[in-house]
Image (tube, rainbow, N blue to C red; front, side, top):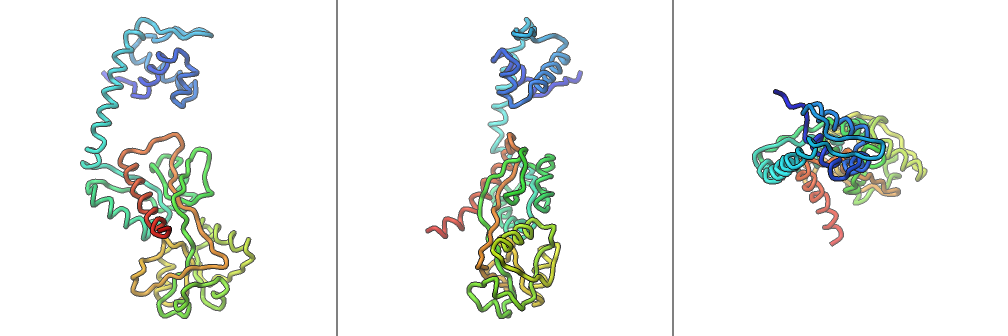
Length: 305
C-alpha cells in the first residue's frame, strides 16, 4: 500500500491543530491558504477520514484528528532529529552541490575554493552551470540549482541576493606590452591600443558600458569575444589588451599575463549569492557557501589591516 502524503502535509496538519485556524496556519508555514487546504485534503484522502470540522468561523478537530496528533508529532520530531544527527555525517559520506556561476567567477576563483573544500569533504560532488547573469538567475528561479554566484542588479521578487564583494574591472596585458610597465592604467591610456572586451550580451559588458557612459569616457573596442578563454588567449598571443573583472584574471605569478588597475573612472561590479527567497540551502550547499564567504572576505580583511 502506497502512502500518498509527505512531510509538508504532516506539518500542515500540526499547524492547523495548534493554531486552530487555516489562515494563521498558512501564514506560519509561508503558504497560501488554498495550498494549505489542498495539503489537508490530500492527507484526509490518504487516511480515508476527515480531520477537521470546518465552519465559516471555526475549525475543530475530529476524533480522528485528535487521535492522530501525538503520532504525527512524534513522527515529525523523529524526522527532524534524524536530519540533525546526520547533518555532518552526510557531509563526510557524500553529497551534491549544484550552482549556477558567472563564467568570469568560474574560471579562476571558483576552482580554488572547490579545491580547498574537497580537502575537507572529499566525497562531495559538484554540478556547475557556468551561465550568463540572466541565464544563471533563471536556473536558480526554476530550481535547477540551489544557488547562484551572480551580479547585483538583475534579480526578481522570487530571489534573494546577498552581496559578498566588490570586484573591480582591471586591465590584462602581455608582460612585454608597453602598458605592462605602468603601475596603474587610466582609461585614456588605452587610446591607440588594440582593446579586447566581451560581447554586448554579457552582463559585465552592460555594466561597463553604462559606467563609462556616465563618466563620459568613449572607448573603441577592437575585438569582442563571447568567452573569457578567448579573450585571455588573445592577450597571451600579444594581439591586444583586455578589460575584465579582477576575479577573472590569472594569478599574479602567471608567466605571460600581468594585471593592472584601471582608473579614471574605477568601475566595479558587486558579486554575491543568489537563492530562492524563503528556501533553505541543503547542509552541503550551505557549508560550501560559508567557505565562499570566508574566501572572499580574506582579501578584504588583509586590505583593511
